[in-house]
Image 1 (cartoon, rainbow, N blue to C red):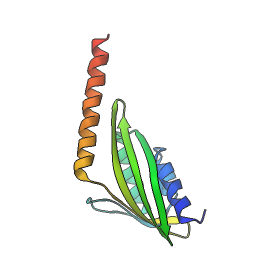
Image 2: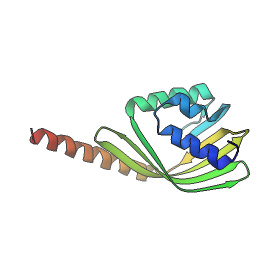
Image 3: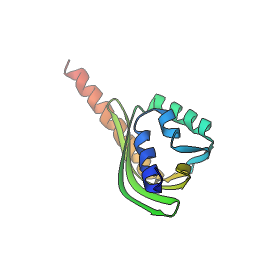
Length: 139
């Protein structure tokens, strides 16, 4: 796979698997991954460790790419990410910047509005509480 858009698409699809090794297989050894404004994770081992920790809490991930554009090795995405666990589900808009070299992602930086993310999480928690309460009442 050499087209940078294809590499990024494969990486984002791998992120839905819940398998950190599959995700980092699309990255260079010295990759930098950052969810702005959080500090960056540097190196494949650190990124895999963070994905493992995230997937202990979040078991379901969906990535819906709306737009993807490349200028040489730089790829930009507009997408909706969906995270969930059980009845909890949060959807939020994300813009990503990726740099691809030699068929591997060397930089993955995501930007999203913190207020929108917080609202999505609160909405997801409210929905989960409602589903859980309704299930208890119907027993």
